[in-house]
Image (tube, rainbow, N blue to C red):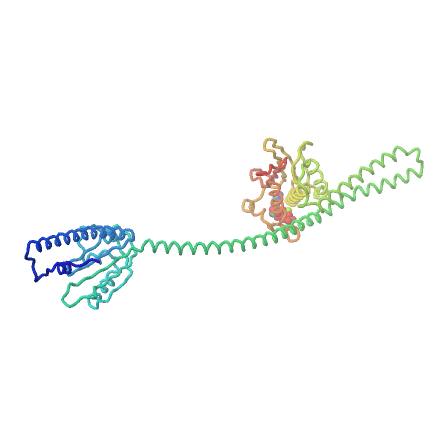
Amino acid sequence: METSLAQQLQRLGLSYQNKPESLKEWQNFIDLINQSYKKLQDALHDLAFKTQILQHVESVTQVGTMSRRDNTIEWSDELYSIFGIDKSVPPSRAAFLGALHPDDRDRINRCFEELVAKRAKFEEEIRVLTPTGLEKHCTMMCELDTKLVPGAHIIFRGIVLDISQRKQAEADRIERDIAEKLSIEMLDLNKALDKEVQERTHELNQTQALLMNAAKMAALGEMAGGVAHEINNPLMAIQLLVEQIKGLIRSDPTKWQDKVLRQADVILRSVKHIASIVDGLRTFSHGGSNDKFEKYPLRVLIENTLKLCQAKLNHNEIRLEVAEINESTHVYCRPTQITQILLNLIANASDAVTELPERWIKISVKEKEKDKLVEIRVTDSGKGIPEHLRDKIFEPLFTTKEIGKGTGLGLSISKGIIAAHQGSLELNTESPHTEFIIRLLTEAPQKENA
Ligand SMILES: Nc1ncnc2c1ncn2[C@@H]1O[C@H](COP(=O)(O)OP(=O)(O)OP(=O)(O)O)[C@@H](O)[C@H]1O
Ligand SMILES: [Mg+2]
C-alpha cells in the first residue's frame, strides 16, 4: 500500500520537528525526497496522458466542459468546437450566452444566477447557434462544488453535450415510422381502390355490354322495316312466278317447259337473295363481342352489310356508290362488329342527307400494304360537322336527333369496338363532305413480349 511522505519520514524516525542530524539521516532524507520527486513526475505524466484521453473522449462523445475557480474560467477544446468559435475568444459567461440561440439566452442566464444564489445544480436543453448559422441541440449541466467551506474558492463545473445527431436520428426514426405507417395505409388504400376499380370496371363492362346490345337491337329495329321491304319484293315476285308456272303447266307442260325452267331459276335466285338477307340478320343479332377475330374478306363484309340497309336507302332515294373493292383485301376483325360500325355510319349518313336536295353516300376502300392497314371511307353529301360538335359526337349519349330516333350511342360504341381492333375511327375534317375513316389491320397484330 502507498504510504505518504509524512509516514515514510516517521518510519525513518524523522519529522518536521525532528530534523535529520547525522550524515546518514540526511542521505536517507535526500533519497526519500528524490523518490517522492520521481513519483510526482510519474503522476504528472500520467495526468497529462489522462487529460489527452479525456479530450479524446470529449470530442468523440461531443461533450464540452467548462469550469470556473474564482475568476478563472476554462473551456475545453470540445466546448469551443461545439460553439464553432475560435480558441482565442476568452471564455466568459457573456461569450457563453452569446453562443446560444437568442431565444435561450435569458433562460440560461437566469439558471446561472440561481446556481450562484441557491447553489442548485441545473440541467437544461439549449440551442447553440454557430457563427456559420448552424443550429445545434445540446443539453447542459452545471453545478457548484457543494462541499465548500466558508471562505474557500468557489468551484463551478459544467458540461455541454451536443445531442444534434441523436435528435436527428430520433427525427429520422419518427419520420421512418410515419413513412412506414403511411405506406401501410397507402397499401391498404390502394388495395381498397383496386377492389373498387375492379367492381366499377365490372359494372361498366356489364353496362357497356347492355348498351351495345341495346344499340344493336335499335339498329335491328331500324333495319327491320327496310329488310321486310327487301324480302317482300322477291316474295311477291316468287308468288307471281309460281302462279304463272301453275297456269303454264296446266295449259301445256311440254310447250312451256323451257319457260317454266327459266322462271324456276328466277325463283331460286330470289330465294337465295332472301336467304342471304335472313342470314345476315341472324349473324348480326347473335354475333358480337364474343366472336373470334378472323381474317375476313372486306368485299364480302361490305356486301353483307349493304344487304341490310340497301332497302332503307332506296326508300329514301339515297344513291349509294361503292367503289371497286379488291377480292384479296382482307381485314383482321370480328366481322359482325365491323358490320355494326358500318351500319351506324351509313344510318347516320342517311339521316344527315334525307332532307338535302343532293342525296348520296359513297364507300371507298384503300389498302395500305406497307402499313398493313385498310382504310374504309364512308362519305355523304352533307357539308361536314360543325367544329363545336366534332369532339362531342363521339361521346356516349350525344345526339342531335329527336327523342326516340337516336340514342347517341352509335359512334361511341363504334370507337370502343375499333379500339379493341387496334384500329381507328375518325372524322375527316379535311374533306369538303362529311367523311368518316375507319382504319383496320389486315393481319393479326404481333403479340408484345410473346
Ligand atoms: N354523317 C353525319 N352527318 C352529320 N352529323 C352526323 C353524322 N354522323 C353523326 N353525326 C352526328 O353525331 C351524333 C352522334 O352520332 P351517333 O351515331 O353516336 O348517335 P345517333 O346517331 O344520334 O344515335 P344512335 O346511333 O345511337 O341511334 C348524331 O346525333 C349527329 O348529330
Ligand atoms: Mg348513329
